[in-house]
Amino acid sequence: MPDRIGVFMLAALVLVAVPGPDVLYITARGMDQGRLAGLTSACSAALGGLVLTLAAALGLSTILESSALAFSIVKYLGAAYLIYLGIRRLLQRNHDITARVEAGRASLPRIFAQGFLIAVLNPKTALFFVAFLPQFVNPGNGSIAAQLVVLGVIFVAIGLCTDTCYALLSGTLGNRVIRRRGFALGQRYLVGGTYLALGIGAAVSHPVRADL
Image 1 (cartoon, rainbow, N blue to C red):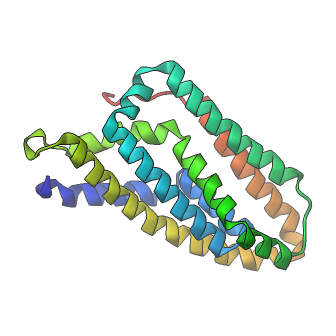
Image 2 (cartoon, rainbow, N blue to C red; image 1 turned 120 degrees about the vertical axis):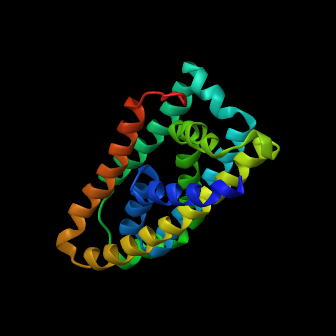
Image 3 (cartoon, rainbow, N blue to C red; image 1 turned 90 degrees about the horizontal axis):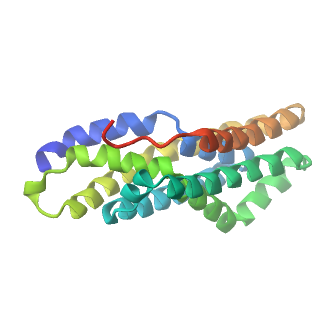
């Protein structure tokens, strides 16, 4: 496996740098509640990635891939939660910027829990580990499960680095934009719409078999 680590890290960097559902969620949090909320979301997404890595190593991803019922249950739970967040944000009344940012910082455990649930309840991420990680596993190098865990941890670490950049950037821009009260309504629709789009996207997604 050592001879494949370099190629794996390069491929992982390209994949995590492209904005996906986790990045959109982190960006939305950062714009809505500041850099600290965005960073908290990035950490929760990383923890969710680690959980899915262990699940992949233990065979959960294979179960999700082979069972339409299991995939649908997890998929629709995650989709419903995202849609709930979007609707709640769209219906939320605008408040003073300082109070909103401080409220977000005061509820960091809740933000962390939400980000973790969104990451874990994304079956496409679990299926991705099944499709991507095995390409860099060599059965002759020992335990396949151990190799999957190592690769998954590296992937999550790279993702955390890029997600942190997105969190800081979105938090900085979000604070500047929201201070202009004329943009408050537009921001509410942007954040709420992002959550809704993620939820709808998850709901209409289809299983992708690892052998494709």
